[in-house]
Length: 214
Image (cartoon, rainbow, N blue to C red; front, side, top):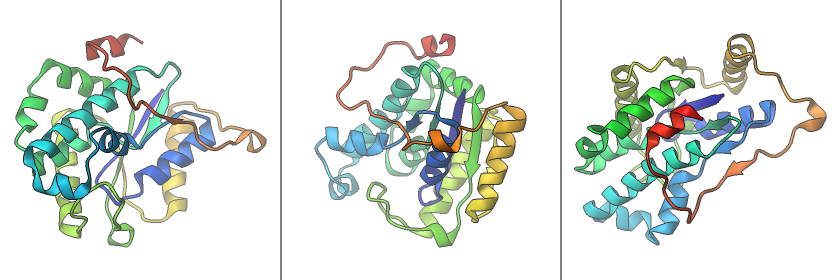
């Protein structure tokens, strides 16, 4: 069971990821970008002014996301998938190198086999998150459009989450996970703080294709 919340920054993806993790007892993959930022021992200011550095950062974020997913044995919920490649398209010159590979094609197939929620942007949710540079409404819309394009090009089935209301978002997600995926809600007495998967400092695995057989 692999559940993804994809979309631009400042859309509430991590909030929904935490909700699903608590409600259904799934490990939560998040903070990947922050972990890579720490490993590179750099800052947002440096990323804004160094094209080569931001390219390396985006490449590592994508690789780390694949790595973390591969190591989960019993499913997970994640607040991203290939999302950061939309940022690579806007801020670097390496997007073609990243997506014109067998590994990328296999990963998109891997994501398509999961459950994907596409969280759409709202002005009310716009805020600086400490990782993304240039948090403006225009940049949010550009990233949102790029992610939609990648979903369509990858033929990835997804459910758009349009509402800004948490209650409506939660009801839509619960309907899909319970009725379609057959997930069972964790008893209230068993609800715990989400288990966040951390991969700082671990070695990269080899072929992404192996992940499809786990």
